Length: 255
Image (cartoon, rainbow, N blue to C red; front, side):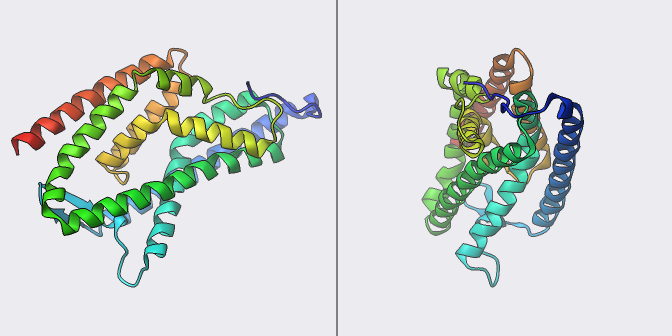
């Protein structure tokens, strides 16, 4: 099940290629982090729309002046890919390093991997924009959203303790043996999306434009894959999410 080296890899080229590998991933990571910081700063200046129930809607879910819904979706997916590259590159670099792929296969692997995340981003936008549209029309639904957000975070925390989490986390560094690199990337991306379902939910609820939340989720995602006792990290983040979700529910009910 693990990623394997191609038969035609040359051992004599391995040291130099590994240094290039590290430099390329480091530069990509730095570039995406910088772009994400700029994007977050620009989004924070656009303000939010207050909603019934003491919460607010970010402008990222609504077309800006002169934008169509297609434009808004494309903008969101672009932002989502940049964010996910900044968050997932550390753990992907760890997996790819042990795979020892050549340059072309590594590029195809990354293309397949982030294609899955891009599709997830489009799905997230469609669901999120739909919920926001309903909430802006129905006051009762808008008032229910804080409670739903708390339940979502609570369930995300419970997922961190589940058998599914164990399964997907174990498969996050494994793909189909002898499969083409792009297909390996698709498989790896699918498993990682499923493994990160809980943490991604937390990120969406607390705000994907919040840099502190992004840093915390990135650290948790990377630690789960790099630290030998990764499930202990998952359990710790799960416990925090359960506590936060319960508190959010209590506040929503009391409000």
